[in-house]
Length: 146
Figure 1 (cartoon, rainbow, N blue to C red):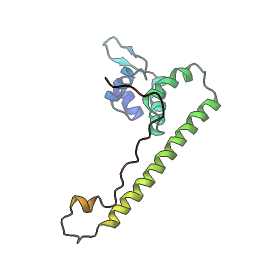
Figure 2: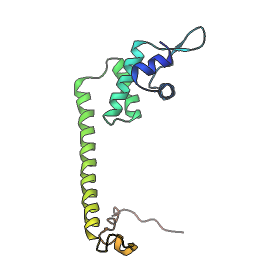
Figure 3: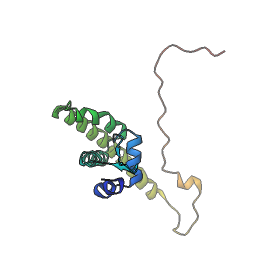
């Protein structure tokens, strides 16, 4: 199949397919006599895998690392579970951050004390905002400044 047919079959644009090829997510396709790219059903399956892995939050670098191993049959279920569990932990961390951010936005919204049509000053808009936590430096040798 040509690039247009593969794009239609997988629901991605031809530009995305060319990008996947440049990023080594798709092997360079064969070429027809007219120079057009020729793709196989295996290429379509690979594109579907890339898209589903992206939908789960995996980066292209993570996908690029595992694809050759999958193709070679070098990945066991335990390894897939490990990657998925790590992704779940990342998602849980993001959810926690978003919950904290939501609390801050609600607190800021609740702290507005002016009339709805009134102009808000910087001081009023930041009344509930918290300063970032100070960065703690680890103890270690001090550098001398010249």
